[in-house]
Image 1 (cartoon, helix red, strand yellow):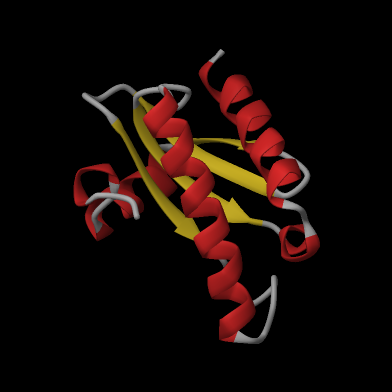
Image 2 (image 1 turned 135 degrees about the vertical axis):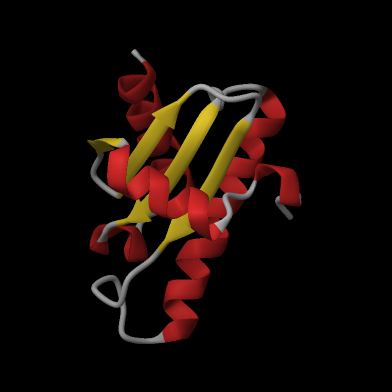
Length: 110
């Protein structure tokens, strides 16, 4: 589980969505603001991905776990990140989503 210090507050999410830059992959899109002391994330899965809350929550849990591993391994750059799941994320393998997130993060911080 992702600890509280790595989660964005509601105000921080709104700030990232308003003034952040974006990068998009096949399964995930990321809105981000570089900088800060540590990586902080939030995961958004809209009803466009699935009408059922159970399926949306499954995607959200998978993405959070991928981000948690990236933070633990030091592969997540410092900054505020809102990770947005795209409709293809519903049927994607965790390994594919992990590769996609890594590629999107590399583009966003380059």
